[in-house]
Length: 629
Image 1 (cartoon, rainbow, N blue to C red):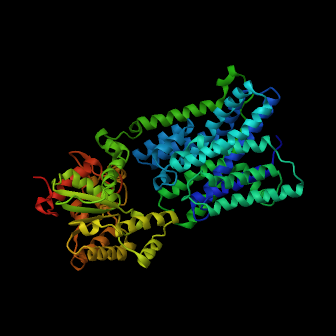
Image 2 (spheres, rainbow, N blue to C red):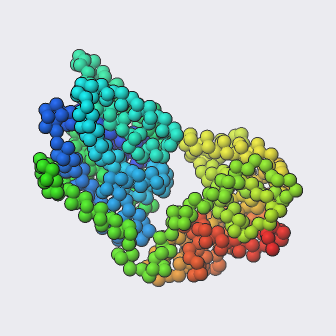
Image 3 (cartoon, rainbow, N blue to C red):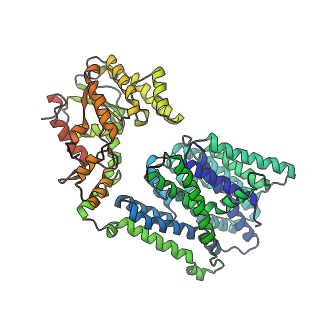
């Protein structure tokens, strides 16, 4: 196929959007749709390769796979190798172990399945995953593996003419499935091939059914396509379900540009052509650069973001010039398949990543008892699920049981932690507990009208989060259980800027229930995850509990002061978690008898909840008949 500058320019338009979105979503809220444009382009190019060779009766599936391996694997291998080398020097054992897992899955081209199982693409936790972006390469490779096999099998039973007709039907059905699945299973739909395949098939439709228009009409069609793509970058955001029916906008836009086969100033200029040529390598390098800036704590500084984007382009150029342009043998027979050099690159890097994952400590040589505590995270012993399990169960309860001491717990994951503490402490059977979840992003829990508008504005929430917070806060304010509670416990991730709204919430709550005992649970966060602090403390030969004291957040002192100062005025009791956890020089985050109390910077492990249950009980915060004897 003749090199098409319009398609190369379209690559540039896609990669620029993706980079802008990743470095700062405000610059291109829907920039992630650039990946969908890449999928359409892949479908167009692969369909062209396969059908041309089928029509000439010279299609070799081995050569097809080798071509793809030569194109994708070398540059990806270098990125993974550099990250494995760099990671040993800058990452903790827990993060290095995770990197090993991600390298192995990326080189094995199933990282999309791994990331689907770990967390959502837009989750904050995903911003520390160095190879998160390789999910799209895994989707493409899975498509490359399956696509030619399906076409070859179908071609055995039908003519190419009928196969092309079936192509239209398959694309339509795949789109309908994607739209339904995105609504039904949003996280899986984002990462997995079945809901993405229609985008690649749409590119195939563009190849199989080229449209013959006058040049003037092609020009307008091309501009319409560009307009749709740009509209998707700026009118869509991560709050939209993706890739549902809204993905039609960038996909149809890319389709129009391809079938128009007409250049314009957006695609046919020197910058677009160079960026288009380097686009694959820029894509590979830009996300690790972003993660480096993010982990370094410079994500809020625009100068670092600008430098990061320029560095991504520079690395992309170097990778294109010295890695992508290396010519590997591709015209080989099935018996010569093992002579494909990129295949060995893939195997070696994947194997090394696997070794890092299964036995990270061979590189660090830390005593096993300490090392094992450094690997504690939300997935170990299902700690993350444990945080939310009980509070979500209690959130479904509609009313209190008669003739019991009624306790209402309000808050986010911090409230989940406190409920687990109460649960471990053995609450008296005459205590009935109900929970109401208000997420941390909301900032406060009991405000309405203009005050609620100001609260949500102060927290700079997206439309989706705004709606979520309004729903949960309004639900709580209208709930009759507020007046029925004998005790109300409130625990959230407090932030300084929300203190006025928090005090307002407590005041409004007290006016609704003048007799209940109200308890405000203070923050228990640290500046760093405890497993990370354990590694740093080990390197510095400092007791981890002493090191934890040095990593108490500054704002927590201010919050403790503010909450304590307003106790008598607003008639509540303040539970100062910092005082319960910390002494003059230590904060208890690790116990020699059982291990680490935290699995990140602010949430208790199962052991931590059990340990703290005794501490809270010993504080005599609640009435003596609150617990079982």
